Each structure stands twice: as C-alpha cells, then as structure tokens.
Image (tube, one colour):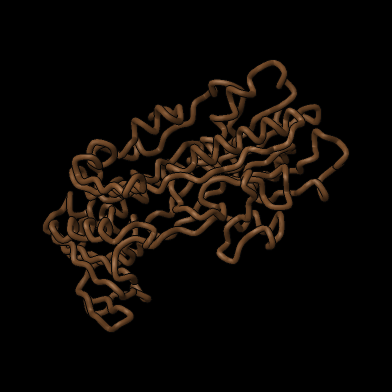
Amino acid sequence: MASSSSTKNIVIIGAGFAGLATFNALSPKLAPKKYDDTNLILITSRPFFTHLPATLRMLVTAEGKLEEQVLMPFPEKPKGKGEIITGTVVRIQPASSSGDEANPTTVGGLVVLEDGKEIPYSILVLATGTTWSGMLNFANSKEEITQHANEWREKFSEAKSIVLAGGGAVGVELAGEIKDYWPDKSVTIVNGQNLLFTDVYPDKWRKAVADQLKQINVELVLEDHIDNAEIHDGQVETRKGKKISTDLVVPTWGGKANTQLVADSFGAETLTKQGLVEVEKTLQVRNHPRVFAVGDIISWSEQKQAAKCGAHATTVATNILSLVDEKVAATEYKGSMEAILVSLGKNRGSAFLNTLWGVVLGSWFVKAVKSKGLMIEMMRGQYGLGKW
C-alpha cells in the first residue's frame, strides 16, 4: 500500500510527541471514502513511543519498573486511516530528483529507508525531534533501553556525590529525582547563568525553584561552567577554577534539533544558523509548500516543549487536508502559551503559567498533575497508546 503509484501518500517522519499528534489528528479525518486514494504513513525508528518526561526517574531507580510504562507500544490499528512503519530514514529525495513532477501522486518526492525501501510521498511532515547525548541518548529497542537504564541506576546508586552540568529542566528534575530516592547523597548543579532555567520565565519563579532545591540540600554553583567532565583525585574543576568533590559528573544540558537529514535533503539554506527548520506561519517549510515541519525542529519564538505539539499538529493537519482537497494551505499557527511544570521527585515541584499576571503554582499543583504519576496515563489516553 505504501509504495503504490496509484495513491497519494502523506508521510510523517518521526513518532515523538509532534509526529504522533499529527498522525492522530489526520487519521480519523482521512477515513471517509472520498480519501480512498490517500494513504497516511508514520515512520518511526522505534516500534514504541518514548514518554521522555518520565525517563529521568526511570534512569534513577528501578522502583515501579518504569521502563514497562515509559516505553509505550503503538496501537496495532489506528482509529481511522493510517499505518505505522518501523524504519530509519536515511534520505529524502525531493520531486526534482525522484520522479515525474507533473504526476500529482508523486509530486512530493521519495523517502528512502535504511533497508533500501522507498516510499513516495505527496505531502511530507518532518517531525524528527531532538537528539540527546549521554544519559538521554536512548537506543531503538526496549532491551537496549532497559540495559542503559540499569547501567545508569547502578552509577547513581554507587555515587555518593553527584555533579550535574546544566541547570535547565533536565538538571533540575534529575536533582529532584536523585534526592527523592537518596536524600543523603550530595548533589550539585553547575549552571552558567545567575539563575536556573532561561529568562523566558520570570526571576521570581526561577528563584522559587532554587529555594525548593536548597530545601532538599541541592547545592547550586551559578555563573560557572563545567567544560571537562573528567574527575581527577575525586574532584571536577569548573571553568572558574572551583573544585567540587564528586564521584559522578552528568551533563544535563539541552538536546540538539535533529535536522541533519533535512539539511542533507533540502539544502542547508532550509535551516537557520541555530540548525532549526525555517517555516512559514502555516508551518510549511520555506520554499517547499508540500513539506511541513512540527515540534522541536521548527524555528519559532517559543520554548521547545511537548505541550506545544498539539497545536502544531492541529495547524498542520488542517493545512494538509486543504492541500489534499486541492485548496490553499492558509491556517496559521498562532503560537502557544508558555508554561512549565517542574517535578522535584514525587511530591515536590513548581509551575509557571504565563497567563494573566503570570501565575506561579507550588508542589500541590505539580504533584497532582505531573510529579506523582509523570503524566503516563494521560499520555496513553491522549495518544491512544498501549502498555507492555
């Protein structure tokens, strides 16, 4: 079905929050008979969805066997139209190099998988997400991820003193998870700015999170960096020369937009200097009207968060249906409210909602919404996912 020349394929590359949300938004709308000649195909390098916000706790402790919950199998059959293919995309051939541009069923181009399989597309959605290094660099099989988690659990268990290099969401939440499970371990966060997180959020909230960390005896070293994570004589040295006693140094800075495939396929001019995909307000890739981009990879003035992906998906799904109906893609993405929920273990946390005058909420709110259950059941229901 996927490679039939008599059909128009809508292909989504990447099954993270943005890609899966786009697939789910399109699936029921393409079910009516008038779309019989249109296929919906989601390509994923893993045969399961990875609920990344819950992986930090999974890496710290085996308690609860979170790998059984965080890695969520895709449904065997979507609610509407669509199929999910497991494979790694190695090349995208735009129409100019892949076929007959006059033929509307192949006008988009071709997606080539690692195993050599070729999938033509009429419309393409890029949802390649973020690449992570070190602790958050997960493999593509459940067995390998479980082994990776066990290795990190052992590292955290054996270390008496831990230094986290980076004071964004990853570093702060990891500190909270470690302290929640091992309150007597020494944990230090080294952060380059004078406050945690980014200045997108107000200072009062950033200070409130710092106060919560201090309450659980997390030490903060601000306006400094760790350039070399090597430990010498039981110490790691910061850029300013401060020596911190430690058994384990964990880089906890942010990830990088996974856009090398985009640059290789559509040209480096498709990306900004920061490596993000240039998009129109319709989320069409600039100069490529039949190619859309969603999620962490787009150049948009907003924080990269899973919570933004639903709005991206709705915008793109509406515009794709317009193209399928031979109309103009005119729906514009209006942006999303900035909000952040930070867990500090199962019972603590802080939230900021950029609404009204800016709302700061404490542990009671974050515990109820995120900290206790890590939004696992909510994700399963929202995305229609299963469990092992």
